[in-house]
Length: 288
Image 1 (cartoon, helix red, strand yellow):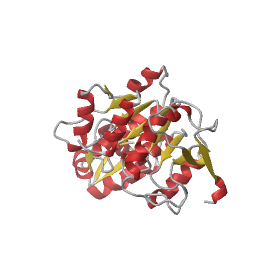
Image 2: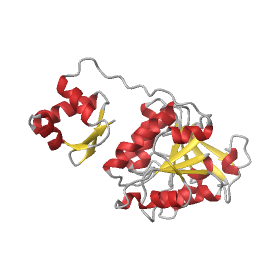
Image 3: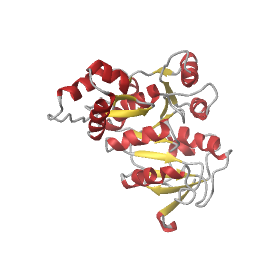
């Protein structure tokens, strides 16, 4: 990425985001790849190692938010962050990634998300950082960038988080800056839901569907485009029905359908190519 394609915004510039200017300790300058879209900025954050539940619920929540017009803000990290960016892009929505490194490809972390970063820019979104191009990631940079995620956004949704995590730092910063905080509940036995359940106890809005967020901002839910091919076999339709509300292991699907695991895997791959199911790892699949 050429240096002249990176814009530097000073805090006094008119293009500097006004909500960020108003927070405690705002960055004095921002480096920007792409452009900041118009609309309500809304952050989605969570665990870097999400459970199958987190992997399933993130696109289910984020896609309707993007379709309704919210600009999805996250940190380009592994796990929930990347899933949130991907969900927005899947619905041709806008998304913004806030980094703890420079915004150039050489410094960007994680390196495996370079292509995702470029897709965000190409789709009309932005890669943002307070650190100059070429700045590598340092441990202290990532908690610091969380204040930018919270500061840019009208609200923050935490999908999954451990009791001590960067996502909870972002949520607490959002509360300090008088932003809305939303949290997805989870099993009390799941360590990845300990933080979100704690936030709900402390007053965060319990979020089970996209409408729980959209209602707060007076936005009307829109139909999320999801074309189901008319050529699906009876077995593929059965798989979709089985995965409608939960994730299942390929072996369980095969047993229910009375066919081999290999045959079921072929059908799951075909459904993945249609964008109808998602592989959550460990042989578990769910509805996309």
